[in-house]
Amino acid sequence: MKSSVLSRLRGSVTIVVRGQHLEKLINELAKEGIEIWNVRSLPERKMEMDVHLDDYFSLRPLLKRTGCRMSVKHRIGMPFLLSRLWRRKIFIGGFAMFIATVFALSSLVWDIEVQGNDKISTEDVLLAAREEGIYPFQWIFRMPKQDKLSAELTRKLAGTSWVGVSRSGTRITIQVVEATRPKEEELYSPSHLISNSDAIITHIYAERGQLEAKKHDRVRKGQVLIAGVQGDSYVVAKGEIRGIVWHEYNIEVPLVRKQNVYTGDKKVKGYLFFGQTAFQITGYGSNGFAHFQTLTELDPLTWRSLKLPIGWMSEKQLETTEIQLKISEKQAKEDGIQRALRDVYAKHGVESKIISQKILHEKSDNGKVYMKVLFEVEQNIAEELPIVHEQGE
Image 1 (cartoon, rainbow, N blue to C red):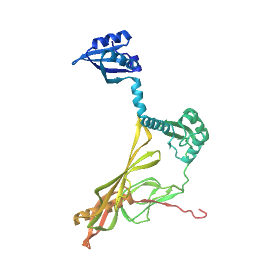
Image 2 (cartoon, rainbow, N blue to C red):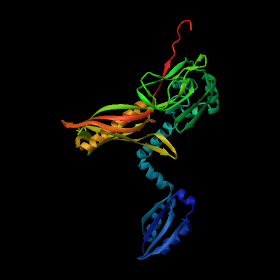
Image 3 (cartoon, helix red, strand yellow):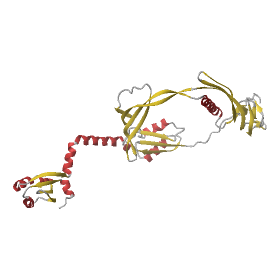
Image 4 (cartoon, rainbow, N blue to C red):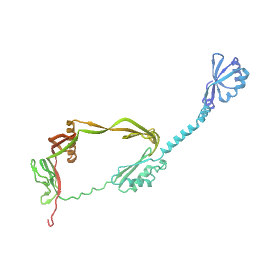
């Protein structure tokens, strides 16, 4: 006879019976109406069988009458499972409390992000959202529906054409689409284009205004290149002017560099974090390092694709020390020239072109390399100069 689902709910016991009158015991069980199944004969006058838990306590009188003894091999079913769980009630209660805490934390709004706002301040958007029930630590199920929130925020925030509200886990994203306004015409005054340095013109093109110089001309700083005059009226001169300019740099590079490196020693601190709050669990005490760098790693709990605002944070404190690196004079010269080139591009634009470079003077003294370098650069040399009208003109 096979065990059923009902027998598992009631509970069953697998017992091993031994004695000289096993057949008599089987007859007694049948006479008393005690159901057994999975009966299997074993060596040395033993027999294995399954019996319901409530019938198990009725076996002792029958065993005594037949001179048999029994031992329990397995316990199966819900009553035994509940008994084991009850012995671990503190653990089960703690686990249930943990699940309830995680569920509660995942049901709160932890972060609000505003996107797409340029002219409207983030503070104004968050204030309007709070009035509609969107704020940190608000229960998610208490928030109004997203279409209603979108309509109310669009109505409250002047200068918006649409405001969308979406939720991803515990984060609320407010997407703002600002209304387009007619572009205001820029106010301008007539101006010339002049040279911003001494140069030789390599390219000149006037889009608006009157040319006052031509290609290959040597010009001085402040000289008018395109005049803001067109016919009998003044205009804003517009065009493209490039020229060759000379830049002289005095470069100083040390032959010994100081650099921070890791020693390999570290101290790790562990924290349990809830949202923006963290509680230290491990790694107490000072690290004893004179200099160190701290690296932080977050490992939040996840449920499916949702990252919960609770988890483990590791803080690694890595010891550092300062070392000195010696470089050759050749490397120092290359580094100094590269530094000067970066300065040229930063001041005169990345579209500038280095035509040539020449070291005018160099020497090594007191652990440093000194150089005077001349760079020939093709760059934009145009600069606006407003036209001042005199009274009566």
